[in-house]
Structures are given as C-alpha cells and as structure tokens.
Length: 490
Image (tube, rainbow, N blue to C red; front, side, top):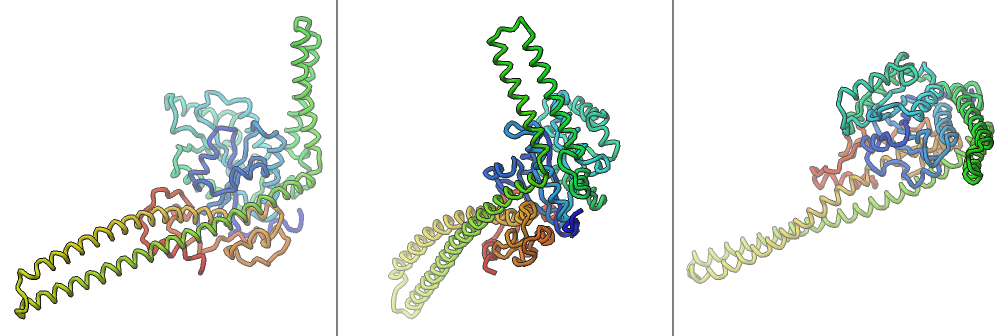
C-alpha cells in the first residue's frame, strides 16, 4: 500500500455510494436529503461520467453522497461507469477517508428482477466482497406510488432477500433491507442506519479497494474486473455465433442479412474496444480521471464565488430595505410627536381662554386626517417592504444553503482531483490553512472539518445538523437574517 494511504482522521468525513439501475429514484432520494442544486450539478457530470456528488452533515460530521449511474446507462459504457466508481473508491481509501456504506436502490414495483438488475447485483458483490455486506443496504423504492396490493410488494421484497442470486448472499452475511417511502424522513433514517453500521464496522476497506490499493492490482485483475471481462468475452462469442448463423441461414434475404450483420459487427467492435480499455494501465485511467476532477474543482470554485457575490448583493438589498423601514418608523414617530404636541398646544389655548373649543375643532380634524393619511401610506410601504424582505430572506437562506453545501464539497473534490488544500480549500477562508500540505491529496482528507461557525449560524439545520429543504420557512426576524448574511464580513 502506498505511503499516503490510510492517514485516518475520524473527523475527515465519510462517503456513501448510492447505486442502482436507471430510473429507481437515486436522484430523488438524494434531493430529499440535501435539496436541489447543492452538488456539482448536471452541467459538470460530463466530466465525471455521470457521477454526481453532494455534501450534507449528519451526526455532527460531514457526509458525502456519491450518486452513481447504473450499469445499464444509456449514454455511458459499463467500463466507463466501472472505472469511475473504482477510481472514486480508490481515491477515498488512499486518503484515509471511509466508505460508510453503499445504498443500492431497487424498485419494489418491478414484477421480476431483470437481467440488468441481476448483473448489477453480481458486480456489486464482486466490488464490495461479502465481508462488507453489513454496510451494503438494499433500499426498495416506489412504496409511495404502488398501485398493486401491498401484500404482493411484501412478498416481492421477501424474495429479494431470500433468493441467493438476488440479494440472498448479502443478507446471509448481514446486509439489511430498507424501505424508502419517498419522503425526507425515511431517507434520513436510512442514511442514519448505514452510518451507524459503518461506525460499528470501523475502517474496513471494500474488496476492490484492497485489490487496487493494498495489492496493487490493475482493473482487469480485480474480482469485479475479471467478471466484467468474462461478460465481454461471453458476449463477443455469442455475437460471433449469431453472425455465423445469420450467414448460413438461406431463408434470410441478403438485404436483411446485411443490416443485421452490420449491427452485430458493430457490437463486436464495441466488445473488443471495452476489453482493450479494461486492459489499459490503471494508473493511466486514474490519472485521466484526476484531471477531469481537477476541472470540476475549478468550476465549483468559480460557481461558489458567484454564490458569495450574489449573497452579498442580496444582503445589501436587504440592508437597504431595513434602513428604509427604520427611517419610516422614525418619520412616523417624529410626526406623531409633532401632532401630539400640536394637540396639547391647542388644548392649552382653550384652557387659557385664548380660543374657543369650536375654533380648534377644524385644526384637530386636519391633524387627524394628516395622521391617518400618513399612517396609511407608511403602512402600505412597510407592508410592501416586509413582503420583499420575507421573499429576500428565503432567497438568502437558500443561497446560503447552496453556498455552504458547495463549499463543503470542495475538500472531497480535492481528494478526487489529487490536490491539496491549496486548490480545494482556498475559498473565502472558510476551509482553513490554505497553504498547508501543498500537493498532497492526504491534506484535503485531513482538513475535511466543516466550519463550526458556518454550521451554527444558519437557521436551516435540522436533523442531526444536516442541511434540509426549507422552502416554507418564514419564521425568522430581521435580526436573525441580518446576522446570517452579515457573517461573510466577520
């Protein structure tokens, strides 16, 4: 194992991989946990082979969620997805971070387990190893949108757990199954459960992490890589047999045969290309991935800086509205004092016999009309300002949430990009020690503590301190909002 590996730091944060075939609800599951637009964003997934990264806090520590495409992805080959996942797992292990667990999502609404799902189960087992089974959860989804009988869904879940070629082997070795009911609370409880298991398991690596880092194997030498290579070879043989049968079938017209042959030969070329890619130097593949993540890191830093500027502009506008409201309040108090003094003066003139009561009635009426008109105008103005401030405060809270979530993701991106805090942490001073550990990936891992000031100043922390969606939050006074948005200047 190389010299940088396993500089373990319990405060450095841990990661949870969210896996499953396309359409099982991975992105929705994660959005329930962290909200929207808090990760690297869809615009950068071309750099990460479709992987999306998110950060949150749970149990008073950072957690990174890795949303991975399934091995049936429409736009990426199985090899590209396999290489991306193994690269991330390898980088995490090398830098002393921990995989808290893996959540594999599966639709409970599927009447049968598809061949694609079976293949995903098998590859996942070969990547994790059965000794890591307690940290691998099967999360069944679509319980909130079932149209069929509940009893049928429960039977289907039971078959998944008990059938060896499905999830049976994992269950026999301690894996748990969980039901996600489509809401935030059940998603949080699932993540909380996998974190608790991960804490009990300690810093045990997955099988493919041991193979790549400790044993120095290349991708095609790992258990999962050998399985993938075997699948490619089997598929190539099957396609070759289909070509032979097609060429010898006299009942097929030459035109039809030509089209089918071209398609089959194209698939064979793709199989051969995948095999060649799998044999490419792992160091070369991972160096390419590091470069891609360094580009993501640069984009994220730019995006986060834009959020800072936007938040500051919102703060200035909010402060302006506050100042206007204070000025209006003072104006109203001054006018009320003037009118009260005017009334006292008029009453004194009546008592002293200088004027008759009837003679001051008109002036008193005019004072009341002026007072009423000013109150009405100021009330309308204040109500409009309060509405604007309420909307602005919600916007600032969302901006702040996005800002903090993206800042907190920078150290993890630094680990994946193979850089230290110089690149990952030098953003507005919220991740300290910008000059420490230059060039060492391990520095990013060891400095993954999120700013306690940031953690404590926002009113949008909820379950165990994790960031959650607060689209309906309105019960914050001006002082709280002002304290929140002024914190950038502290």
